[in-house]
Length: 436
Image (cartoon, rainbow, N blue to C red; front, side):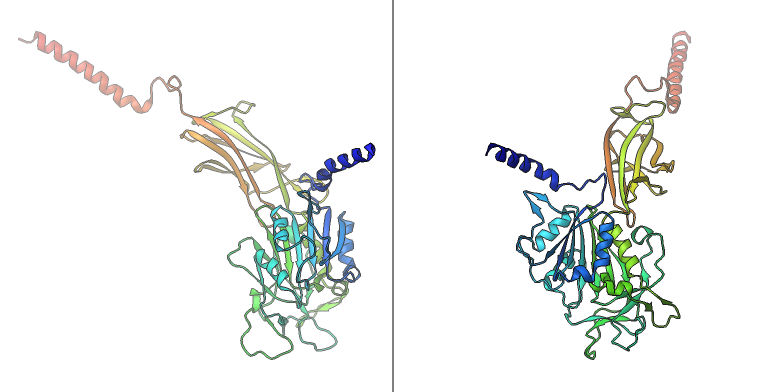
């Protein structure tokens, strides 16, 4: 009985450590919870799931209405990422709800949401909280009579062949996606007030959102390039989110389907879906575009140690090291747009950092002729990369009384005036005393 109690206490004490295995030094999400409407999706979307497993992710599949659902236990999160492939779910099981999903993202963890024509209000609310608005018409789908995928039957042109990708190597990889991506689902728009949302895959100017089974009685609300097919969000805490209106986008069916875009002479044996989904999932799960900054330091020119304070007009050197996660290890990050601010209420010095292309960034500058409490600030934001925000406080003092120059050049007129006054008084005294 004593041994049982001992193991129980040890287990409870180690539980938080086991639950917080996400290591920012190796930012690879390892534990992923996947919520499904039906376990049949495990086989119909197996290529996508197997690609995640091949990258070292531990996948846990659960039904969205499972009464045991919970994202955390004893205040510690059990998962590093959440994939919601349950568009029909009106209410999650267990302790999971809209607030829990948003709190999960607020904690810095990642999220993928896929909807379809049967998307519930719950799924749409999650998307809205992330800055994306699905079409309010529950029967509407994306239709395009010019950029559809050619098939054996005429169809209703709801199988879209899109190649309007975001121009970002860090999000979609350096290898160009040659084949169009097949999309069959519902449209969404990006909230203009949310500057964190990016359209990764957009519809063509001829697309619109409407019910494909009925004639249009009024102009559609969503048309053209305003329709986003796939969007991503990088929150201010560097959590990443992917939202799409097509669950079929991840399916084996569309992964393997040959594609020819209407009006194009080129036919591809395989759609671009697999490459597109694989590359964007690498970004969402921080296998690419994840930066870290270390070893922020500074010192006076000619010295090696970091001082407790600077004096106005001191010459100093500033250093910081920045690395990018390659999926397996940290590699030097090379860029020419990293800047440092010497900041007090506003930046007094703004300097672009030079790099040795081995991760080390450096700059030299003179402390401004203003004393007070300053900060070295590196605030770096670039499309597709995690943001960096570092600061280090340092006081700046004025000259002491014995540190000024003995004779100040700008004071020479005053020196001359003083001696002239003395000489004039001396001459006046002699003239006054000896003149009869």
